[in-house]
Structures are given as C-alpha cells and as structure tokens.
Image (tube, rainbow, N blue to C red; front, top):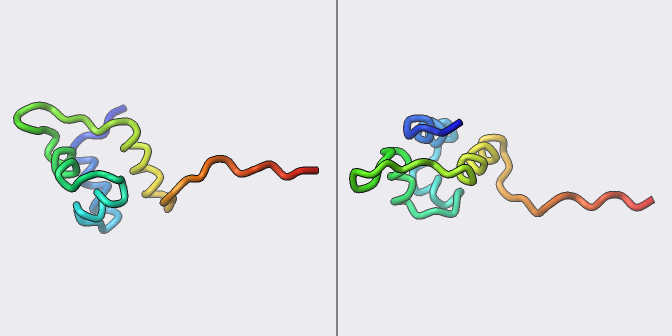
Length: 75
C-alpha cells in the first residue's frame, strides 16, 4: 500500500506539525516534505518511501526514537 500526497499532508496536519517540524522529526530537509505533499518534483512523480511511511506511523503512535529490542531478563 502506498501513501498518497494527500495522505502524507493529512498525517502531518493531524499531528499539528509544520512542514519544518515534520522534516525535523523525520530527519529530512523541508523541501522533501514539500515534494511528498505535492506528489511530484520537477514534473516527476515522487513516492513516499516505505521507511518514511513507517516513521510516520511510529510518530503518529508517540514513538520518537528506537534503540533496538530490549534485553531479555536474565534468569
């Protein structure tokens, strides 16, 4: 399943983020956010990569960072 330009913009707005905030949260340049929201760059189609879609999902669920799996309890 893909994330359309309108879906990406809806995600950002649902979290009350500016384009600059979204760029910072996703580790991207603000211009990339604009491309994702427009769905194109210089007339060429731009798709939201899976890694960014997954990051959007995580941010929407309050996950701001991931440090790997938790160590299992020794016993």
